[in-house]
Each structure stands twice: as structure tokens, then as C-alpha cells.
Image 1 (cartoon, rainbow, N blue to C red):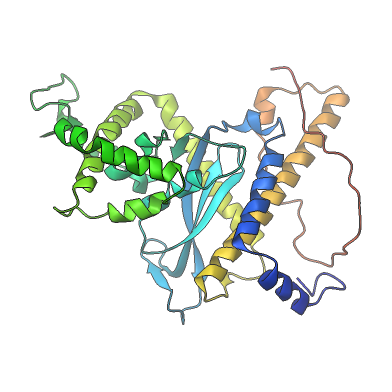
Image 2 (tube, rainbow, N blue to C red):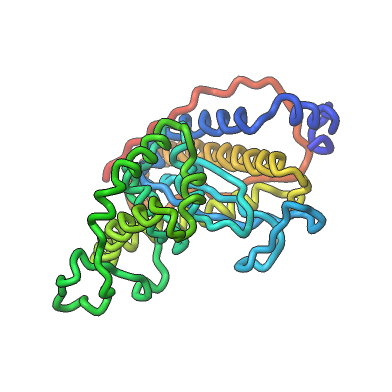
Length: 357
């Protein structure tokens, strides 16, 4: 950065990073950009702000690192940057987790720690989000978990009673039935856990790590699992019976995966996180998240202005035309070269765009 900006030294940048920039301040800046992005009318034609998707991608680390782990799926050493992206393309939350962690443990942290104006209550994910305790906790938090499913026929479906039978889909269900007495017995304890998360006393990932083992002493795990089986079976029935729902889930998850590629494109100049301290690694992910959101905001602004110019020239804008755009454009951006810092006063941003549907 110091080589590309005149008048700024590497020591000055390092001083600001160490003394002024913290994870909390970066998150506050991210929320500020999200709130400004939410004022645009264009993203409302791109997606539903009540929906969000979670997905992780691997980031490389130095091999000589005590915090390093090998990711069996990505086939490399590093950590996982876990993002929550709105269906309207903007990223709401970012986290840096070990490769060996089950991603579903952290799937709720992005919604409970999100302080922006965009507050989704429908959450999408990949197959790792199909854990029964996760379903139980999301249900009590008022969040509807709707992940993308791979090989749904291999999942376990549970009957409400052992005597229940179905004419055409009975082969999908196991002989095991739901233990409603167990849910009723531990429901006050489960509600207390949900209220503690709502109050910010404890994070969902902390609870889900405690609920990760099926120990006989862990009665609360079996209660959350039993409730999750009910909610998950209901969702599976909805999933196989609604083709439009499957399209919506696939599109939302694709947007989150698209943000992963976009964020890594923004992180140019190196393909490895050079810090060995976990807090500094998280700060790098937050920096990258902030820059990616700023570029998304810039792209949305320029697309809005271009569409207004086309409309002024007499072109009729349609919903199909608007839906074909995306703020993940990169071809017009120059990441390299010399940049001068100037005091400029930009014109007020025009957030609105109206057209005939």
C-alpha cells in the first residue's frame, strides 16, 4: 500500500493498524456501509433482505504455525473464512475459524452478532447445516434454517408416532418416532438457552460446541436433537414438495459462494495470510470484508447512475433487465497503479431508481 500511495510510509500504515484499527471498529465500519447500501432501491430487485446464506472458503496460512490445520476437503493448510451474505448480495458478517471445526457450529453467530439494518430471519447454508441440534436452536431463536441439501434421500426422517404410516413416502421414514415427552421435559431449559443468546450473554457457537457430543450425561443435547428432528423433518417435506423453494435456496447459496470468490479477488498482492496470531488473522478477514463491501457499494452506485442515464435517453427498464445485474463486477476496477489521496467532496448519492414492471 505504501508503494502505491504517495506520501504514506509503511510505518505509518502499521501504526494505524496496531493502534487505531481494531476488530470492533472494523465491524462498526462494515455495519455503516451495510446500512448505506440498504438505502439503495436496486438491491431490492436483486433479492430478499430477509434471507441470508452462510458459506466458508479456505485461506492459506504459513505452514510453520501452531494455529495451522489441514482442510481435508480443500486439500491445503490454513483456516476458513466464514461469511454470511444477504440475498441482496452484501456481506453481513465474517469470521475466521479453524479448518477442523464443523461450520454449522458458527452458522448462527453471523445473525446474532449482526447489528446492521438488514436483519434476515431465513438462513441458508450447505449440507453441513443439517445438524439436528442446530435446527432445534434456530427454531427457538425464531430463525428458519433452509440449507441446500446433497443426497436428501440418505437423511433420517422421523415419524410423530410409531403407528404413523404414509401411503407414498413411508419408505423415507425410519421406524424411530419423536420423543415428545423429552422435548416437553427440557423445553424450559432450552428456552432459557435461547433467551441467553438473545440477550447477548453467550454466543450460539459456544452452546453448539457443548451440544456436539451425544453423551448420556448431556441431556440437553438429546432435547435439542429431538426438537431439531421435528423441525428438520418438516423442512425436508417442504423441500421435496416445492420446486420453487429449491430454486430460491440454490440461488441464495450461489450468491454467498460468489461473494467468497469476490472477496478473494479483492485480496490481491498475496495468496497467504502472513500473520501467525489468531486475532490478527481475524482482523485481516475483517479488513477484506470491509473493502469488498465498499466495492459492492461502489458498483451498486455506478449501476444505479448508468440505469438512470439509460432511462433518461428513453430506454424502458424492466424487471428482467434489472435482475440480470450483479454488484460483483470486477472488470472495470484497477487494483494496481499509483493512487493520490486528495480532498474531494463527492456529490450526494442518489439511492432511488424507479421503472415500470
